[in-house]
Image (cartoon, rainbow, N blue to C red; front, side):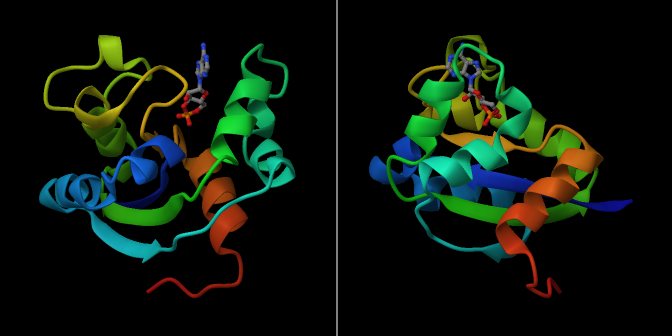
Amino acid sequence: MSQRTFSIIKPDAVKAGHTAAILAEIEKAGFKIVAIKRMSISRAQAEGFYHVHAARPFFGELTEFMSSGPIFPMVLEKDNAIADLRTLMGATDPAKADAGTIRKKFAVSIGENAIHGSDAEDTAAFEIGYFFAGIELK
Ligand code: CMP
């Protein structure tokens, strides 16, 4: 069944000039890009987005990094989008990511790991609303 998920091309990948290559991987894998924009976020916006990780030891590093430069938040659609995007991204730590995955090809480290993808339907709904509230997605 067609499903939507939320993704971000992170500051490390944008800075390194990998945006188009990552979008090509996403389209090649059968995702429709329903919405996308380039923007920078404040530390406070990054903290709001990642609020579920607030108690983690890496929260400061994570929110500083995510507010360090331009990102591309986007909404993606396909059958089984949430799980399929996570497979395409590979493991959080690029050292553990399978060959051929986006993180294996483009990520620098567990923190600077090129791409984010929602992990469940409820988080996808929250994350889409966080970046695309009030925008009609067709
Ligand atoms: P993401 O899918 O965006 O969701 C939470 C992020 O926290 C994750 O990707 C990683 O980039 C980051 N993260 C997870 N573990 C660590 C860690 N040990 N050190 C730094 N960042 C981490």
